[in-house]
Image 1 (cartoon, one colour):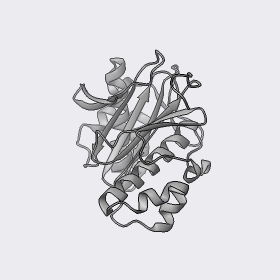
Image 2 (image 1 turned 45 degrees about the vertical axis):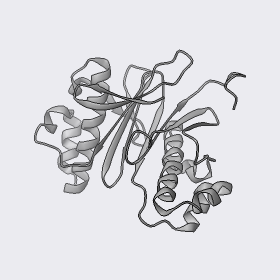
Image 3 (image 1 turned 120 degrees about the vertical axis):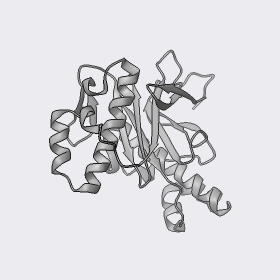
Length: 227
């Protein structure tokens, strides 16, 4: 089961992946204005990009890059500015010279980062929506939409946020993002974990007040584990 740990001042969530593989590390923070020390954490190229952005986008960029650098730095015992973060073609983040994967997500009020030493990882964070269009529920939840729609409003919003964050985390872990049509991924809203294709996903809203999910590549399930 996921649990809270503390590392380098970060409230980390550790997610066991089983099979002797390393845990996933996830961190989520409220989207507050970055402090003046952010510039010391970013790389020279990141600082140039940061200066060229509009204020709101610059703040989001600084929050995300700072969080992912601090998370990976805490895991590897490196200063954040020495984390070998790079951009893949298309803009996704990666770590140079290591099989480990990183992922980053922004919502209106939160920023989340994930690090997995064993390969690609996807993370997504969303606040449960205040207003929820039934058509959107049906699109994303498919045959399970009736289960979501009959819940009281707060629970309905939380279950929808769970489904959507899992779907987004999965397409991020594959490296395709929204081009992968995440709304087509079947997700059981009542489940805390599950599988899709060669991925294993974990819903983390039981340890956070917002929708939060992470996905990683997984081996085929054992007969004891089931699908």
